[in-house]
Length: 169
Image (cartoon, rainbow, N blue to C red; front, top):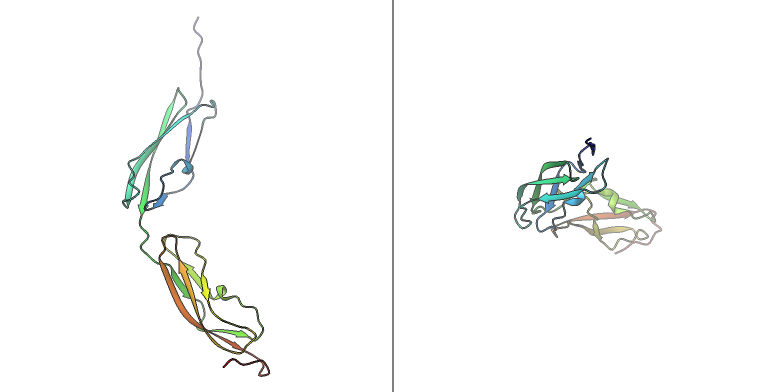
């Protein structure tokens, strides 16, 4: 009499992103882009094969494999190493900024900061605006991306209002 042992289905590899793009000189940590599991067995051996040179931009072919001891599956994928040579872009949404005397100062709403590679770039504003003094103020906004590329834009802000308000000279 022969006893037949069935283990069920093979391991499953899910890629959690549509593409893998890493900045030049990044640490290569590919495991975080995948979910590997087996519906029948707890022990899974996962291997990732690659020849990525993080110092050299390009597209590298890679492979991830998973084995539960009975079945083995693999998935081929590409990793792009890129070099961010482009500074962020600053777009002013209005022709001029005019603030009413005593109003709240929120310069960020007048600008859009964008970058080809970095999603979140916080603008840095340099100014001496006093919304409680009528006058014109020269200001600057600076945007710096993760690769330390920067763009700056100078602009003027006019504070206007009641003639009884203090006037800067």
